[in-house]
Picture: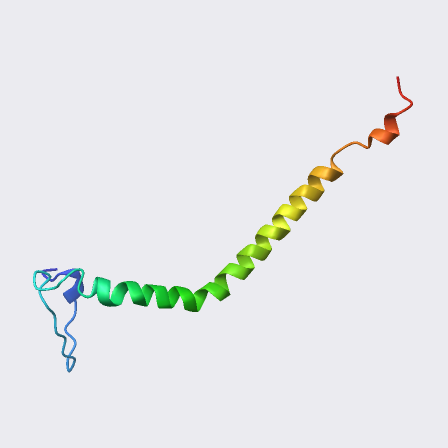
Length: 82
């Protein structure tokens, strides 16, 4: 097995181009395109993500409060006890 994992077989008629990692810029256009693109994507998805989480939180808090209230004893039932 003298070949590396990515080169196990030779595929014909497919041309691949690579660039050295030392020639790449890790943060190319980060401030000019990256942050505005992140903000645009956030604005596009926030109305799909936030409402279900808010509704789930409201249902959870309501159910927790109802459960706590149902676990309490009614003081009127024990007025005549000594």
